[in-house]
Image 1 (tube, one colour):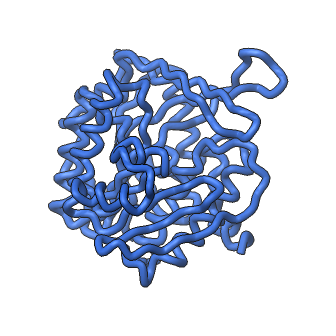
Image 2: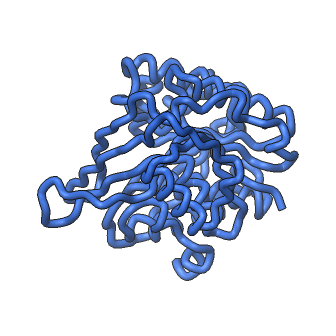
Length: 312
């Protein structure tokens, strides 16, 4: 059985306690770790690849990943650096605002030497996000993992996942994201991120411009909140899917759930990144996202396959 390897940060999301001022509850988070849990809860094999601390926060993260079926054999423990933290504020629509505490944390020290060739097998997938691409050891560990995965015949998945306040400047973030688009077989981007990357507000025009940077890519996915999602191939053929109605409690992890759903369909259901085949995977992802936004916190709200099926 092939695996989905997710590389990058795992961190603590401190979620607000409803009805209280500046009171927070710790939840396991970090986009790559969330995707790993999402794949595992659907019945796939999610492997987390990254560096964690020996502190109480990372011990909690490892425990939560394992409880959600994630394989942590590739975790490297760093005894000298702390875990990254994110404090999350929610508005009345359940949308998020992040405040990060990430100075010399363990995830940034993730090193090329932590990436072993034997991690990847043909038919696996490697998923990465932009948070791990800031100028640090982590960026070069990502490059090694991506190039190794490509050489081994793996699917390479990139979730743009822009967090501008983690970068020296927004332009630095945009330039790096566009650079790494060249490595990906599939790219997931939100409609707001698409505008940020291209400067074009019209969706198809922005996607067309993004293709200029994505030389290996087969499909670009655009997530649009209440407007559902779209998938484009290189000829600009498009397939869309509408949202599945659900009570929205917390949108944290919705994009990660989408990525996990697409990867699950590609790796385990052998869905190809073509407009002829991708429609059912998009509908699957919309049902999965309807489950996750109805929960509180990202990782623990990722749906099981049965929950997705019952949303049909």
